[in-house]
Length: 200
Image (cartoon, rainbow, N blue to C red; front, side):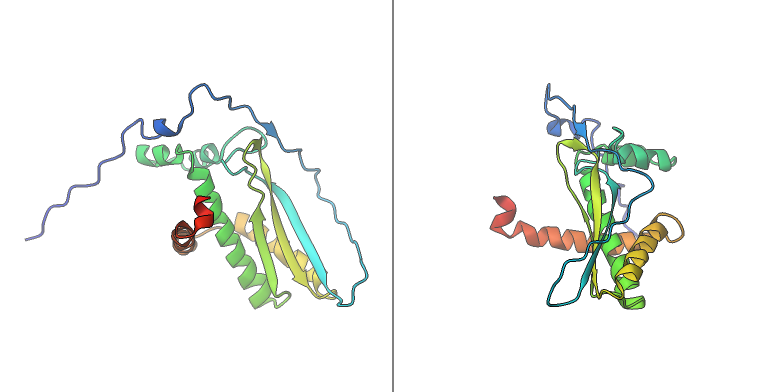
């Protein structure tokens, strides 16, 4: 005989009301728009150790999920997911949804850069994806930093751009990528909870 387990109850309709600040102005100034197409700039400084650092930057949401045009990560996800349940919609309305989603995207982008640019193409020892994390502005920036030898810098830069483009088009985030990133982000968060720096 199998025990009957009731499905979990959905959260109440006003689950996020405790996070809303009454009469708080929600007007933010946005980040400047990027010029399209992007620009390429080479700068050489003399150094005792020949090396190169390349950057790829672009538009991203703020820490709270606001894009420069005023839309939010939650709105964009909802528009793309026409089959979302009421529970999914409610979770996406949580104030920390965008922050959590962006942490997952950042983790996945870093893994892809590592596996493509470092392991498969062997162009760099380090490629790092990061988000600016503006809190009071609409929009933000992402930045990919890649260090390489001078001879491989241009190829490493192109490989980073190709990896980001593949994330968006030909090789999007898979459920396995998402589950793996969730484990890493949750473990990191649980570790940070045990530090005084997290609470200060």
